[in-house]
Image (cartoon, rainbow, N blue to C red):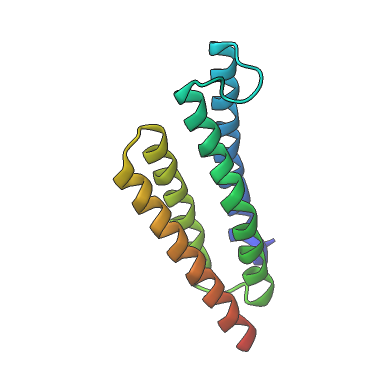
Length: 128
């Protein structure tokens, strides 16, 4: 299991975050009695978008982290990549939900940078 430790940490933490986003959408649907779509409710629309953004970003990043774990399980970059990505997804969501464009932009920018760093780490791991 040690070889996949950071992948497992990634899956646990990001699955919990996505679950919280899902529960938030359901909570708002119940509160505002909206079964389909966002019903024109801006709060629900933001919550749906936060959840969707997470489901867009997390799966491909999980595959990259898993691939790095296969290629080089002792890679010192793994914990850094997992922790930074996870924290920036929270920052991005916080910025979206509270309509703070700067936090949203910072979260998105660091997410993209972390994804690029993870791709480069995987490429280097293949050549090692």
